[in-house]
Length: 531
Image (cartoon, rainbow, N blue to C red; front, side):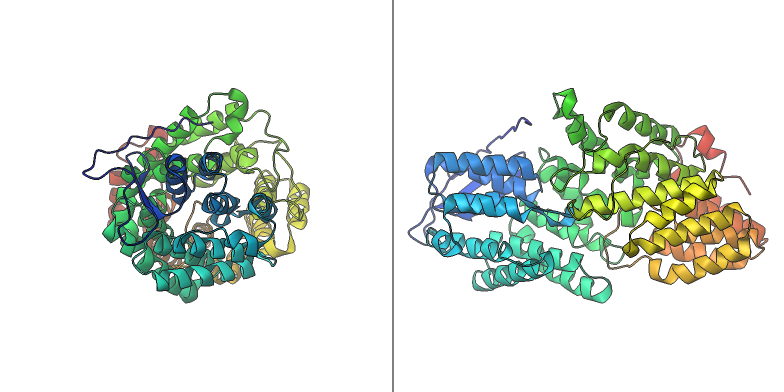
């Protein structure tokens, strides 16, 4: 268990101040390492510190630590209904593709056998409002319908208590969950609604961890990243003891191409993750998500040696990860070596580090989490792609055929790689131009380092090889509009410009890359002048 350091700031008022607007106690905590939170609740005095600590942790998606804090609050006050609802809520990590309603319902059952009986135990309006939302979320139904019910209930709370910071913060989270299921203008509309709720809280309390966090989540796309930059700059200062808060600013830095900031964010997150693990047998609990993002940023800066070292780090820390994938456990550690090695090959052209023996999980297994299903599909795609690049068409086709029907675009990309290997540029271009419209960057959806090869850059290279550099230039420029300062796109653009006879343009693009790669490895820097 990670050690939690809480330092209460000296204030004019006590840390737990009285609410003069009603008969109930308004509990407030200012936690130097986790941010400032408040919730009008009825728990006894002993339960306040663990409860409010859990609330701050929950807003930073530190789910395991939050759950333990809420359980500590229940131990202090067994009749504290709100702590049970909060504990149950930690079972759903929707943005991460993880949801365990059975575990949540088991927690709720320990409070009382029915929703009606549980809601009767709420002793403040805020407790009742949050309780109704959680009960709506864990009623029967699929995830989409449960999110809709949760969001409706949270919106109702926020509308009836528009100055309540927790009502507005949790409403923002609920709306983000809705937006996460959509694309395009529909997602953008919801994200703007979420930002409005979170920004209200952030303006009133600049140290509220959820406010900053949810502004970032509702802005982590090419269209909205600028609006989330201030929150991204502040969040790690608000909650430096929350590992996720150290990583989360990267979700704004990536769509803006702020690679140095992204490196600093994830180096801190990875260090915090490793420091928190004292048992070597628990290495699989490391922050592999942040390590993925760190490698991506290293690669954009031409720090290939550092990016390559992360593959070795992951390999050393995960010797017994095989099969450690279920609906309750992160699959991140099982696939981390493969993911890092694949990205390294995609960005540098060096596939020698890609593992031969990797974990194999059935991507169609209904018992595993959505996160595990996606990673299993990406693994099939990656292994099939590398097989194609190595000339093993039989293994490549077998891997592509094993992909779920919902991942047919991955299978198509494997087929394109086989065409590349055969040197059929015309067929590659035709296939990519067919696939590309549906795979274009959605400017209103969340961005993350992709586990797939970049379609724009693959198409650009094929166009140059086919003697169509002007068309390649247009593709690279469009790619850089959506993913600014991507190293491979800049290198591809420079080569296309050179092939088109635009020596001045090629020189300018290389100068841009040289400035970005001021700390790059000699191996990487040698590529800048390559034609």
